[in-house]
Length: 94
Image 1 (spheres, one colour):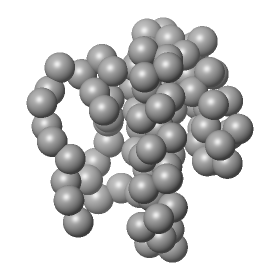
Image 2 (image 1 turned 135 degrees about the horizontal axis):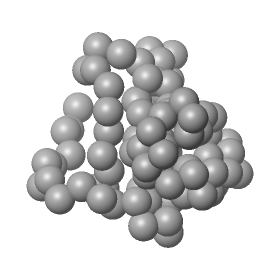
Image 3 (image 1 turned 120 degrees about the vertical axis):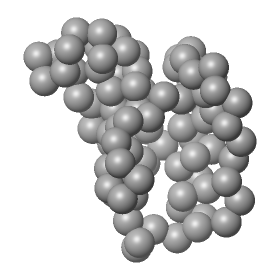
């Protein structure tokens, strides 16, 4: 997907870097329209160009729900130009 994520592997919160307030707001709005809960974290809580969006994963989510969320996030990444990462990490198959 090309996203830059922050956080720890053992945390249910996944912060996704969106850099700008406007892109964070657009991302949260896009996900809300697709019934995915998320929270934008912007300045002054974060440094000005380190705005991010957070999603929370749960053991209560089904594989289908997680796959749907990933599909919608990938669609948002393409539409909003959030693929900042140059890393070539592949998908993890479970």
